[in-house]
Amino acid sequence: MCGIVGYIGKEQAAPILLDGLAKLEYRGYDSAGLAVYDGKDIEVVKAKGRLQALRDLTGDGKKITGTLGIGHTRWATHGEPSVSNAHPHFNKDKSIAVVHNGIIENYQPLKEKLVSKGYTFVSDTDTEVVAHLLDYYYDGNPLHAVEKVMHRVQGSYALGILFKEFPDRMYAVRKDSPLIVGASGEGNFIASDVPAILKYTREVYFIENREICELSGEGIAFYNEDMESITKETKTIEWDVEAAEKGGYEHFMLKEIYEQPKAVLDTINPRIQDDRIVIEELNMDREEIEKLRRIYIIGCGSAYHVGVTGKYVIEKLTRIPVEVDLASEFRYRDPILEENSMVIIISQSGETADSLAALRKAQEMGVKVLGVVNVVGSTIAREADNVLYTWAGPEISVATTKAYSTQLAALDLLAIMFGEIRGTISKEEYAELLGELKSLPDKIQEILGDKERIQWFASKYANAQDVFFLGRGVDYATSLEGSLKLKEISYIHSEAYAAGELKHGTISLIEDGVLTVAVVTQPDLYEKMISNIVEVRTRGGYIFTLTNKGNCVMEDTSDFTVYIPKTHPCLTPSLAVIPLQLFGYYVSVAKGLDVDKPRNLAKSVTVE
Image (tube, rainbow, N blue to C red; front, side, top):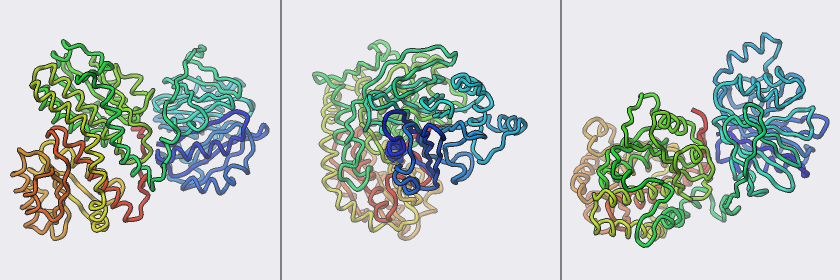
């Protein structure tokens, strides 16, 4: 949510800032702005809507001169989308400019205090409080002002700050909102995510909570909240620049769907050695795994759906009880965590605010946390006791695809490994599961090679008003993800239900022509699913069935059938989700929607 880019160096800042903001569009935004300092004045230009409006106002940045600047894309929280509410924000005499990601929770009492001191507000945002508060505390030393503001504001923030009296300096600070610093020979950068600066540098610093950064064209200095100088090490980003580009695909989402065979392979291969699963980063010996009494899986959105899938698979293969929580609810249910248990936090970005809060809650309760994360060096990756990276590479589209698939693969690795160590699966089943796990990339590729039928069917149902997804067992978890994919990028109302719940209310919604997607990949549940499908069909519903190759009997009760390659029942979610991703994608394309940037959604939800 929101995007920050800052630059100080030898080049003109505005074009660099616009280029960086364009790389952050996937985070979601409704307005954008720049503040560029030419050595005399800080010029601010803001626009409502897409970044192109800001490009038009500034002539692609050429109309604004200066080698120091900050830029921002805003996703509205306090105040409607408008030019006045867009960032950057000024203090009263326009000598301090601020961009901000996050939420200032105590902004109202701070605002009331500042108004009583004579400050006037021109926006509805919580961010403007920060600009005026910096002004209130400024005594000629920017670091002192930033330090005092840190101790006064509550909530989450990543701040980029310019002071008119310091034309050769830029300041940054963070708490619970992501911020990185990039270093290069041509200048230095701040950004809320790596893609914004990857074109210019691969050397980055990951800023910890309550650390302050002072950047100049020549160097970078870091301080803790007590204003003590600290030393930090750079990390080298290994991504190729091309990995964050469309590479000839019409949309990032389609590109990322097609990257799934390689992404899953990259997740699996490093953890299989001599036909054994070895997860060294887990840092658990056999005795600890044997003593595990319970696993808690926590995530948001698609990551939560991975957790629901993981519950079925882990319990089946290891006989360890698993609880799955929405991260946003975990703290508020006053959880009880058993001894000899583990918490798994799943997050693509590693910055999800609710997931990070759940991580800290679990650690406070004395339970070790494993982060299943894609972004190297992210906050969850740094704060978790151990981290299992998925190595999916940059995922730009808001609707996750390859991150979801790699998270599934990561949990499958854990489940199979734990099952073998605990003796809950035989040597023969272990070998079968391992072989099927290694074959997943090729089978995903096989599904992608037969996308035309799904594309045709999606165009036929692009005008649907309601779509229902049904499944039993692990297929219910896959249905949850399929439904989410469709609704978030096509804006069609869709719901997923455990098929056994049909008679408990859902069936009253079925009428002539309503599309129902039935996920049927579990052989033990074929007959029960056929009964559910017949119930829907007799009430006029149109049936799209997704099932395993060879299960041709489903065609007798279905109007449209898609087959996936056979695999072990516990691994079918990795295959079944692919046609559902393609279905959602092609429905959105048929409707002419912005597939990669669906309305009201953000890629990285860094506020509660």
